[in-house]
Length: 282
Length: 165
Image (tube, rainbow over all chains, first blue to last red; front, top):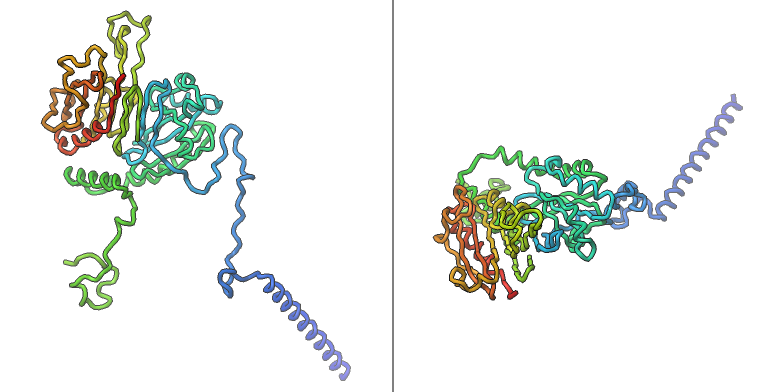
C-alpha cells in the first residue's frame, strides 16, 4: 500500500513538472513574440493588430490577352475631358462635349494600325447592331495627325459617329493603348467605367456593368410624380446653372445647413428637436 | 473650348460643341455640272461652314443644319455661319459689317426656317467680315423659349472671330 502511494506521488510530481515546463515554454514564446512586435498595432500600442491584408495579385502577375493593352497602373478611374481635334479628313475642326451634357458618352480609343481595332471599326460601321444603351453617344478617338495617317483613319471612320483625331485625349483619359473604351456619365462628367476587350460584344458587356446604375436611376425617375412643364424646366435650368458655376451633383455646398439655433427653437426642450436642425415646423 | 480652322476661330461657351469644316467637293465624274444632289453640285467650290450648338451635333448634317434641327429640344439652339464666295463680299445683300451678336427674340420667325418644324423659329442675317461674305443662320428649338435661349446664341457668336483670307 505504501509503495502504491509513493508511486502515485512520483507520478503526480512528474506530471506537475511537465505542466510547469509547458507553461514556462509557452510564456517564453509569448515573450519572444511580444519582443518581435507581433499581436500589437504599432499605431495603437496595447491594441490588437488588424488581421493581415488579403494577398492581392500584383500587376506584374496579371496577364491579359496579347492583343489588348494591360490595364493602367492606377486604382481609380482616369479623368474625363471634352474632345477637341480634327476630323479624319483633316479639313474640319471639331469639338465634342462630353462633360456637363444630358447624355452619357462611350469614348472609343482606336488606332488605324492595330489588328484588334479592325474588329471595332467593322462593328461601328453597322450602328444598329451595336445595341448602344439608350441616351448614350459613341465617339471614336484616334491619335492626332502626329501619330496617325488622316487618310487611313478616314477610310475606316464610320459615317454615323463622330471621329476625332486628338493625341491630347489619350493623355487626358490616361489611355494605356488601343483599343480602349471609357464610359463617361454626362451630367457629372465623371468616368463610370473603362476597359478593353477583343471585340465589341465583350466591351459592351463590360460597359453594361457601368450603365446598371444609370438604368436604375432612370427607372426610379420614371416612378416620380410628373411635374408641370414650368417646374421641370425651372429645375433643369437651375441644374444647368449650378453645373456651369462648378457645383456638381453631390457637392457638399448643396447640403450645407446653418447649425446656429433658430430664435423660435431656442426654448425647445432637449429631445423634442433631435435630428431636425435647420427646418421649420408647421 | 477653342476651335479653329479655315480662318475662323471660336471659343465655345460651356455646354456647346461645334464644327468648322469644308464640305467634301463632289467628284466631277460622279455627276454632271449643274446637277444638284444631296452632297452638292459637281461644279461648285465648297466654302467653310460653321456649326455651333448647345446639343450633340449629329454627323450627318446639311450646310444649314438639316439633320441637326430634327433632333433639337426645347432649349436647344443651333448657330450656322455659312460662307459665300469672295465675289459676294460687300454686295448689297452682304452690306452689314461684322458678325451679328445682338440677336433679339423678335428677330426670330418660323417663316425664316429653311425647313419648317413645328415650334421652331429661325433668324437669317447676311454680313461681311474682313472681306468674307457670310450668312448667320440661327435656329431655336422652341420659339417660346427665345428669351432664355437667344442670349446663349449671342454669347457663342460674340466669341467667334473671322480672319481675312
